[in-house]
Length: 315
Ligand code: NDP
Image 1 (cartoon, rainbow, N blue to C red):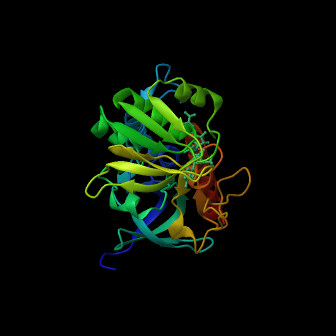
Image 2: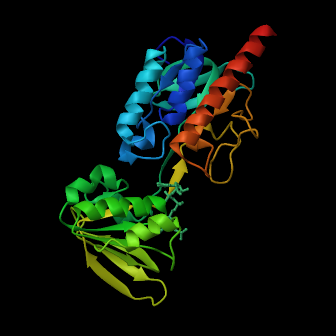
Image 3: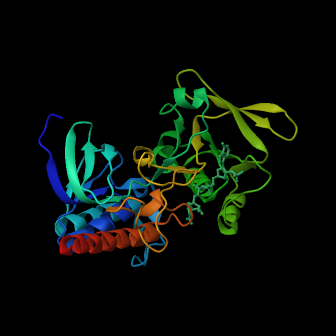
């Protein structure tokens, strides 16, 4: 390691609603939190538009603006927010915990709060990887603008896919929704929105066989899994909205997780199996996954960390 080891009381990994809320509480409890933002500062809400279900905003708020507000509040109260990626950890029950940032900087933290969230899943086709950024995207709100006036396709049948199809329908000529079963997973309200939008065509029992195009997306070859027929649809944009994977890989050697990689916390708390390491937000929640529940669990993590540090100091 090239730099001296920095000692930190409370280290927060991740900058979504969970991380920033943990930071707000930790800063007010005088735990001098240091927060590393990670690869996507602000987290998933920075790639969404209107947030209408976060209490306290009667007219809604744009996701990126909301996250900017979270950050401002955390900084104003004394959080040291840093741009950087935690690349590895070495956890020991009771600590201190060793955390490496950007592969080089070593930090020794008394308490660690994991709030690394979750990332979009991909289909896993070579053509999807090859054309990523050249017509293939996992964020309609970020990239839809590039395909305005054209025909596009979106894979998925959950609330995210419906929300994104609806968004795309406003700027694109036509949206094909590729649904692998004969029904949606999304809530009835979201389904209704999609099914009543004239320029969204839902193709049921439809899987993506190949995304077509050399330099950029030119079409998609789809397979009807009932009839086994394939068909090519000309499109310019291909959007993937099939769910998320928790960003917990680096913690695997130390932290107990379920089979999908979600961190297991002690019931009703944010405590992981490693004493002194806490977890909040989507990294441990595959059920609710809302900004407000993430924020709530961030608060829990800071309170749990604060109590744990106080008890440790009293010993
Ligand atoms: P979900 O896990 O709910 O849905 C994923 C969808 O992708 C499913 O329809 C699934 O199909 C489909 N899928 C998965 N893998 C593939 C594949 N390889 N090929 C084709 N299709 C595939 O994820 P979401 O991101 O939609 O939602 C996550 C959570 O966030 C949910 O709880 C949702 O309710 C919530 N949410 C709420 C919103 C709101 O209330 N405004 C907005 C967005 C999300 P299948 O059904 O066949 O398994």
